Structures are given as structure tokens and as C-alpha cells.
Amino acid sequence: MADQSRDEYEPAEADDVLERLAEISEDEAEARARSLREGLEDYDLDEEDADILARYLDGDEDEEDEAPLPVLAIVGRPNVGKSTLVNRILGRREAVVEDVPGVTRDRVSYRAEWMGREFTIVDTGGWEHDAKGIHASVAAQAEMAVDVADAVLLVVEATVGATATDEAVVKMLRRKKKPVVLVANKVDSELVEAEASALWGLGFGEPHPVSALHGRGAADMLDAVMEVLPDVSAFGGVPERGGPRRVALIGRPNVGKSSLLNKTAGAERVVVDDLAGTTRDPVDELVELGGRQWRFVDTAGIRRRQHMAHGADFYASLRTQTALDRAEVAVVLLAVDEVLSEQDVRILQMAIDSGRALVLAFNKWDLLDDERRRYLEREIERDLAHVAWAPRVNLSAKTGWHKDKLVPALDTALEGWETRISTSRLNAFLGELVAAHPHPVRGGKQPRILFATQASSRPPKFVLFTSGFLDPGYRRFITRRLRETFGFVGTPIEVSMRVREKRKR
Picture 1 (cartoon, rainbow, N blue to C red):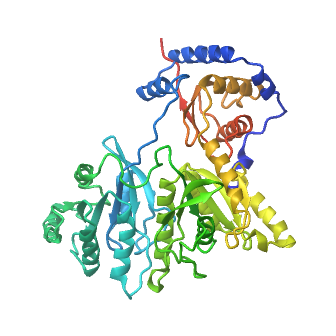
Picture 2: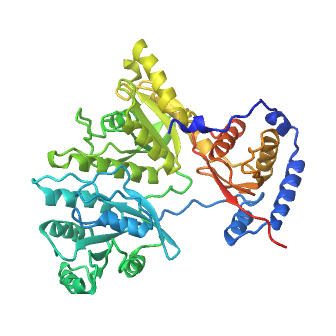
Picture 3: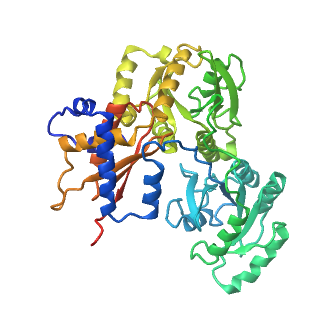
């Protein structure tokens, strides 16, 4: 991640884009944008292009919050093919698959689509095998996913039938009363289908015979899933505008999340223990900070049990993702008395990928000595260069020192997250930028930006209609200059392309 900035396009010389942009009047900018928009008529555009252009031209900038996608949890005992089934549904190999039960993964949720409907899959593949209490551990892990799901895909191996572990999961599912689609996996031929019928006895209706490996029966299974999945999830999603702003406290175990929540709330609301991962459930807490109410979500993971060491990592990832889904801004806590770890950087990437506003909170700052401070600055420069745009707060969660400095940082990040640039001003900016620094010629051709619009805010997403593919380094250059020109402090920015060819006459 830290290497991305090195791949950025580097202009040969300085420019006066800001000065030139300031000299362009609104009327002139609008006239330029209209001309560019009319020029697009010479290119082949599809229905999605037309929708983008119709919705986000100047004067039509009101937008609705994106409704949270329905969530499907895939549960079942180890090695029944859950991750293979996830990959089959996604149509690509994303979930890690090995012929070893309990391969752990960082990522636990994926965006999927079937027959034009999008939904989120939560995969419960990661766990650690142990002879003690394995049935309970699998069921407990599945329960975490089911709690945040709208429907459940229960995967059972047809040729083996329902085992004691399956029964433990079934017992939990009956208690949850969520819609369940039963999958009899590893049905690779018609001969095995008869064995699948024995699973009627589980009480979840018709078992759907499927071969996740070969794709057999997957379409019928997904049709059944669509019948029980709601259009909008009852869990997660960015909350509606208005009311207290929602803040996710995230970070690796024992970094101080619960202590910070207690200090901001002014009371011992969350159990704090030196053992990493003491908190079992995320705690939503209304707190007053800076004279205003905020809704904080603590995501300190769960109590680690001897037989669920890797399971705790799964819980932490799932809780973090769930909190991010429900938040508007993420506060990533980093402990300055320890070296920045790979886990810190990974959690930070989860926050960036979630598209939420971002604040970096460096905890235990009061324990920092001069030598550690020097090393820390090097670590920040090396590992956090790709989030130099995020506001930084130095604080002590234990004593509450500098906790009030969170408020201006949160406000700054949320303001950047909600910033919108008019289509006319955006195209004027890009016109001046490209004139000063044209895209490098590739294969005898030079791609041009034909027209641009900001498709949405929260987070800011920009769509560039181009005549050819823009190098990733050049897109990063555009992103950096957007930040320098228009702010966007504390928010990820997405710049996507729609490469279009001239219509043949």
C-alpha cells in the first residue's frame, strides 16, 4: 500500500492550475462543461452512461443514501465446501480454498450479484481445529455471522449427512429464526442426489443438491436465496442523515478502544481488561463530546477462548466490518508504544475500502519518549504515506488527554466525506490540469478525458469518460490534485473511468 504513492505520475515541471482555475468564471465553466457534454454524443454510450449523465449534471445534485445490501451468511461445519461455494457464487476465486479444514482469512465478506440483484456474502470459513468443544466453536462462529445476516445458507455435505457439528449449527439456527436455505453440497452426480434427500429431517425444508466445485445446481440454489433475501438489509448501511453522527472505533485488540469509549462516555460502560479481546459484543454508546452527541460503536473483538484462537480473528474482522458498514466515520486507533504492525495496516485498509471518512488516533502518546518518537515518524512515513490525507490526533485513551481534539478531526473528515464539486468546476479543473500535464502517449495514442462528473459523495466518487485507458499512476496524480485543490481531507476518493469509442458514421 505504501508503494502506491511511488507509482504516481510525476509532472516534469510546476504549473499554475490553481491560478488559472480561479480566473475562470462560473458562466465560462458551465459553458465549457456543456460543450464537453455535447461532444459525448459523438461516442457510443450505454444505458448506464446515460443514467450517470442524467442524474449528476449541475442542478441535479441531490442524492439518496445508498440502501444497505441484504446480507447472506454461509455457515456449516469445516471442510463442507463453504469457500468453494462462495467462489462459485461470486464467479471468481476470492475466498481462500485449501484442502485443509479451517484456513484462516482476513476478509470475511464479499459483494455478490445474481439476476441483477446485489447482496453481501458473509463467509464463516476461518476457525482453528481443536478436539475440545469443536461443535460449540463452529456454532458460535456461525452465530456471529447469522446475527448480522438477513438470511442464511446452511451447507451440509450430502454424502456424509448431518453430523454432531451440523446439529449444533442447526440448533443455533432454530433459535435465531432467520430464513434458511439448506444446501446439500458435493452432489457431483445424479447418483448422489438421493442421499441429499435425507437432509429433509433437519427441518429447513427442501435440501438443494449442489456441486460447488462444478457449479451443478448453483442456479436453482441462488433462485431460492433470492426468494428469502429482502431488498434492503435490516443490518448495516450508512444511517440516514440527521441525528448523532456514527463513529466506528476500530483497531487491533488491546489498542485502547474500550478505554477511549469509557473516557468519552464519562463512565465505565465497557469491560476493560489487559487480555486482548475482552469485549464480546460491539457496544453502541451515545456520548457527548465537544458539546454535541455522537454515537460511538466499540469493536474490541471478543474474549479469546483456548479452543478458538483463530476464531477470535474471524470475530474481530466481522465485528470491524459490521461496525464500518453502520458508521459514517472510522477512528483507527494505533498504539504508539509499539511498532506499527501488519495488522494495523490491514485494519486501516478495511476502513479505506469501506468508503467511510477516516481519522487516525495515535494512542498512548503520553508514554512516548524522544527515541520512540523518531522511530514512529519513520514508520508513519513508510507505512501510512497512503493515508497522509487523514486527520491525525495524538491522545491518551487511558487518561482522556486530548480526547476533545477528536471533535475537530471528526468534523473535518465528515466535511471532506460529504464534499461535492459542481460538474462545471470539475471539468474546468481537469481541463487546466490536463493542458498543463497531458497523459503520456502510449502505443502512439494519447487518451483524453472527454467529460467528468462527481457521481456521489459520502465518499466522493468521480467518473471520467475517456477516449482510452488512463494509467493508474496518472489517476493517482488526478486524485492527489483533487485533494490539493478542493480539500477532501479525511475521506477516500474513488476515480473510475468509462472508456468510450467514437460512434462509427
